[in-house]
Structure formats: structure tokens, C-alpha cells
Image (cartoon, rainbow, N blue to C red; front, side, top):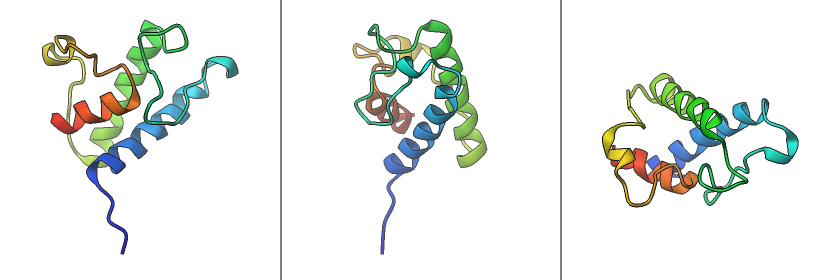
Length: 98
């Protein structure tokens, strides 16, 4: 019997969003599907507009697939010492906290 955790479910959902976002990104700028992939905050990550698209798509997928409505860009997210948008893992952990 295989037990899938909430973290694995959300990570898989975010990886699906990465697949969609990568379709519109140049090959040398695509996101890697790994938990330590940097989403925002380095020169190899998403720019501001790409990040907005990514966040909106994640929020939509969470609502569509899991039936939960979340806002990833609230005051709590913006006031974190370590940005929840730093890596896939920090984003997933933040979403689990919500």
C-alpha cells in the first residue's frame, strides 16, 4: 500500500504548473522539477511577471484539483524572513501552513 502525503500531492500539483509555465519560457530559462528549484530571487529564476503567472496558476490548480481557495500573496507571505517563493520546497511548505 502506497500512502501519498499532502506534501507529495501539492508538490506534484506544483510540478504540473511548472510543466505549463515552461511551455512559454525559453529552453535555457525553464524551471527544473525539483524541490530545491529556485523560483524567485536569483538570475536563473522567474522574473516578476513570470512569478505572478506562476502564482496565479498554482492558486487556480489548488482550487480546481483540491477544492481549496488560497491566496499566496497575502501580507503573511510578504512578511516572511525567508520568502515562500524562494524554492519549490519553501512554497509547498508555505501552502501546507495555509
